[in-house]
Each structure stands twice: as C-alpha cells, then as structure tokens.
Image (cartoon, rainbow, N blue to C red; front, top):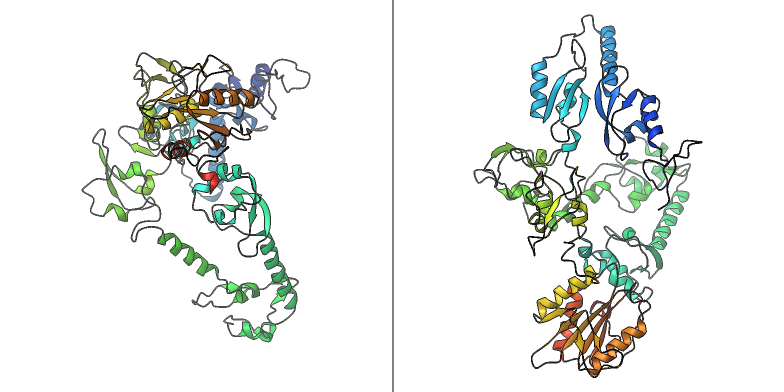
Length: 603
C-alpha cells in the first residue's frame, strides 16, 4: 500500500489517515488545525470520524469534537459552548431592542438536570452563571461517554449516538433480486435477440448495466441502464422524442392565437379572464387557464394537457387506486413494521388491520421480553430512537431481528446484546462469537463482516468458496448421501491416480454422480485440466455435471452422462442449479446435450 504524506505544503511526514481523493494530514498539522479554531487536542488522533476530546482555549470547557466537523468550520470558533453562549447573548440583545422588559429569569437547573437524566445524559452543570434561556449546559452521554455542551432544548432530543435511522432490511448478496425473477414491466421490453443470455441470467432489478431494449409498441431498439427502466413505467426515447416534437409543433401552431379562436378550448373554458384576450401560447410558453377535466377538477392547464386530456389530479387518484388494488380492502397503505406488529396489546379496541405505520392513534403495546406495556402512537415509534421497548432499550431493526442466526452465535461476554445494535452499526468493541458447530470455537469479528458472510475461521473449509459450500448444501438437501471433497481412485483414470471432486453422490443401485463448480477466476487457465478430469470420471462410470461460471468456454465433451450448466459470478442461484441437476438425474440423462444450458437460460 502506498504511504500518503501530509497535504500541507512542504511537509513530508506520513499522513495520520489514508484517503482516495481528499487531502490528508499528519498528526502535528491536525493538532494545529484544532488549535486554529481555539481547541487543544487532548487525545491521540485515529480516524476523521472519531469524536476526540478537546479543551477550549477561551472557556476551558472539555467536549468531544470530530475532525470532520472541524474541517467544515472554516475560520469559526470550534467550541460548542462558546458558540451557544454567544448565540444566546445575541438573542437577548435582539429581545432587549424589541421588548421593554425581556425575560432574564434563570432557568430551573433541577428541571434541566431531570431532563438530562430522562434522556440518558449525566448532567455536569451549567456553563454560565446565571444560566439563562438558551445558555449551554455540560453533559455526558451515558451510552457513548461523549462530553458535549448543549442547550436545554437539545438535551431534550438526546445524544445522536442513540438515533436509530430507519433502514431497509439488509439483503444478503446471494438473495439479490434479479430482473428475470421479478414482475417488473421492463421484462416485456428486454431485447433477448440483442443481449447475451448471461445478461438475462444475472441482471439485478436495480442494476446499472447498460442493456438493449425493444419498444413493444413501435419496435424501436435502444440502450439504457436497467435501473432507468425498472421501478416504474419504462419508456422509449424515440417515442418520447416523437411526442415532444408533436407538442412543440402544437405550440408553434397556437403561438399568438387567442383562446376564443380555438373551439376545443372554448368548450372547456371556465376561467375568470376574457378568452378573446387570453393567448394560448406566448413566446413559446403555454399559458395555463382553468379548463375542467372530465371528472370536474378545476386546475390550471395548458393547451397540450387539455388536448391530450391530461389532468394531474386524475393521475394522482388513478395512482392511489392502483396502489389500493394491490392490497386487501381496508388495510393501510403503510402497514406496521413486523416487529412493532408483534407487540400489539390484546386490549386495544381497534383492529390491528386498520392501523398503519403513520397512524396517530394512541395504541397500547406489550414487550414480549420484559412484560412492559406502554401507550404510544405508531408514527412516533418510527422516529429518531426507534426503540423496540423503552424499558429494555432494545432497537427496532436490530441485528437479532434481521439475522437471528448471528444472534445465536453472539457470545454472552459481549458488553451488549444483539437486540441493542443494528447490523451495520460501528461499535467501540469487536464482538465475540461462538461457533454453532463447535462451542469451543470462539473468535472475534465485526458485526459488519459477519453480516457480509464471514464464518468461523476454524470451521472454514480450505479451498472451498462460499458458492461451492452453498451449492453442496443445496445438493445435499436433495441427495442425503452427497459428500464434499471426497477423493476418488479408479484404474480407469489416465491422468492421475485419484481426483477430488467438489461434490460426490453415491447412489444405491444407481449411477454415481459428480458435481463440479468452475469459478471464472480460478478455472480460466484450467480448460485442459477440467476436461481431463471430467473424462477420467466419466470413464470410471460417474455422471458428471459441471457448472461453468461467466465466460468460461465449454469443455465440448460429447457424452450422454455429461452436462454443463451456466452461472454468472454476480448472480449465482444455487437452488436453481441444484434443481436443474436433479431434473437431469431423474430424467435418466436422456435429454443431455453438450454444453446444455440451465433452465433459465433455455427460456
């Protein structure tokens, strides 16, 4: 890795952190940048996103400040206490100029202390004497231990470390939804004769791959990213340009023409102005007037919308009705989160089916863990902290909720539970995990790496990729006798004495089976070896199925007990591959052909 040096001109000291394109600095100049903004750095710098303990050179207040925040200050003072103090004094000066008797009553410190305690803060004291409205107070978060200067209103909002932003449910890579498996309208636009079969096999529903499309109405062919065509109403650029040209011609036709001269517009005219002096188009721009639509909506519309019978109100109603058609009658548009739904208290008088995520009803909830019950609006449960239970302090969208299999491996020695963290949360410790296969295997790994698929380092099979292990598990579900990495020896082998296939299935009274997964990277230069291995196994009486990844060439083996399936490295569906394999076996190998594609590729 290339060592980066400090961005300051003339400094050749190694930088304290690495970046790709942004500037970076050494620890000495980072401390100077804090000092230029009135702060003494009291902790060793580690990362730009860390909160570092500082002391103000003016007021002596100690607070935690991020280096990224300091960079964004410009020439302003870096102490939050000083800024809040100056802001409050400025507000009082303005109030003194507006009111004869401005409010200079000191705040109730007991009330501020109580508010800090209820929002998980340790109250350290006021930073002004007397402490007036808007003045800062010194507090420390009990969760992240950060010191900060906050006014009473900000204390009521709690520390930002407790904010639990709503996220979509994390999706593992192998579960990524593909366009071919969706019901998106863009599938009807896919130009199969212009695109590679591998693109249809692997294109994600929200991918950025550029693909050929065919307009189903006019047959126009064009290229566009997948994510530009999915998720809504796909459109043809040629047809769109044709419509735009028609609209431009319409504007040119009615340039300078008055509404009274157009019978189609006069039939709908309901504006307060005089149609004889109201131009349809002036200087190339349509002038909107009140032309009620067929449903009676009185919205200003231009000539193009009127002649095209387009009404934004009608479109909004149709969209809403279309959305309602896809859900059961009487159910809310935004249903309750499944975790929240599970806490529904039986004493609620309203049916749960009638309550949505944005409801303002006061609903009673029950925590299944501690038995705590409370009353809260559903819409408030989805805000800021997003707590599963205010008594347990557990979080919605936690690691345990999204990944229960990882929660089972969470070690009791960890300082918190998987119900108190979210999957991609940055923690101040590295969690400890216990292997589900062998409780003596204990190791440390970040929650982010575990969510990404890392496993027990002692149980990991050497030389086996994640895809191979998943394919083996899928085959074993269908053939319980399947084994992985079993060596095979036979006098029929001509290249080697023994081979070690990826998957071997021995069947009582049936032809033994072999499944090989050929990754595009590792097998790019092994065509001859793969061919010789397959021929040896076929000579020994095995039926061989090879999954060839990406652009790997076919081995061109013409044998009734040999089959090739295709997969794409970014969209491997092991269950579909296993299903094709079983169909081939149960079919008695009769339908085999060299390089036979998978089920999806034959569609």
